[in-house]
Length: 424
Ligand SMILES: Nc1ncnc2c1ncn2[C@@H]1O[C@H](COS(=O)(=O)NC(=O)[C@@H](N)CO)[C@@H](O)[C@H]1O
Image (cartoon, rainbow, N blue to C red; front, side):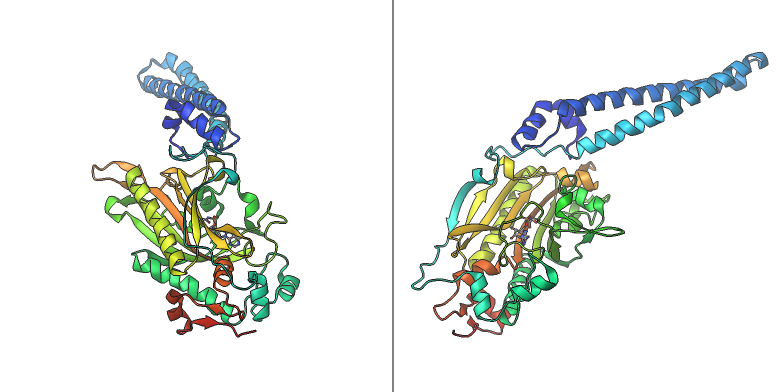
C-alpha cells in the first residue's frame, strides 16, 4: 500500500507503476473517490460543529426560543446519521482500491511484460559436462528406491511427493544446513505455522489477487500460506517498535502450501512444483531507509548465493522485469539453478525488497531517533526450498553408477557420508 498523500502528489508516477506492472487499476477513480470522501468528511465535520454550537445555545436561550433550537439539534443529528452510510461506503471502496495500488519499481528495474523479459545479470559455476548420459531427478530417485510416485498419487493426487530412505536425509540435511548457515549470520531461527488469518495474506500483499493460490479450510477462517513470509510479516502487525529493535532478521522454516492454480501442465512430474513443500525463508524488517533496504537486499541475495555455492550448484541471477515482480516489490531478483535434464536454469530463490508497502498494510511502525513514527521496510528471500532444490542437487551430483556425490558442506549433516545411494 502507498501513502494516499504520495498518490495525490505523484499520480503520474503511480499511474506509470500501474501501467508497467500490468495492474488493472484506475488511479483517477481512486482520486475521485478520495476527493468525494474528503468532501463528505468536511460536511460531516461542519454539521457536527453546527450541532455543537447549537447545543450550547439551548441553555442560554429564552424559553420560547428553545423548542426551535432543540428541533434544529435533532435535524442536524439526522443529517449526520444520513451521511454515515455514504461515508462508510466511500471509506471501504477507497481502502479496497488502495490495497491494489502497486509499489513504485526501483529505477534499475527493466520494463517488461513477463518473465521472458527478465534480465540475466550473471552466471556462477559451470554446468557439469557428464561423461555418461545423465538421468533426470525422477529416474535417479526411482532407481535408488527413494520415491513412490504412483502410490502417493493414489493417496494424495497430482503434485504430491514422497521421499524414502537417504533422499529424506538429504532433504532434512539441506534444510538444516540452510538454517544453521543463516543462524550463523545472525538470523533468528523461527519454526512457524503455515496457518494464518486472511489479514496476514493482505499484509504480505498476496491478497487481494492471489486468493486462488491459497488452500482454504472448510468452516475455518484460517488458510494455508504458500510461504512463511505471510505469517512472519504479520507477527508484529499493528505494533510500534523502538528504533533500536530494528533490524529484525529471521530464518523461518515452515511448510508451504500452494494450489498452483493456473500452472496446469507445467512441471507435472517430480519435485519442481508440488502442493506442499518446506522452505527456510529469509525475512528482514529494517528502518525506513532505501539505502539500508538495498544493502539488506544484497545481503539476502548473497546469503542464497553462498548457500548454492556451498552446495556446488551452478546458477544465474536474473533481475525481474516490471511485469514479473508483483505489485508490492521495489526490487526483485530470482536465482535460477542449473537443471541438467532440462538444460535450463530453473528458479530456486526469489529475493525481494518492498520498502514500506507491506508495513503500511500490517500497520507496523517504529519511532525513529527524532521520535517520528515511520513504517518499517521489509525484505524477503528464499533460503532453501525443498524438495525443489533436490532436483539440481541430485542431477548435478549424480555419478556414473547412479550414486549421488554429497557436497562437502552437507557431509556433516549426513553422518560424514560422501556418497548417497548404491551403485546400480
Ligand atoms: N509449488 C512449489 N513447489 C515446490 N517449490 C516451490 C513451489 N513454489 C515455490 N517454490 C519454491 O519456493 C521458492 C520461493 O517461492 S516464491 O513464491 O518465488 N517466493 C517466496 O515465496 C518468497 N517469500 C521468497 O521465498 C521458489 O523460488 C521455489 O524454489
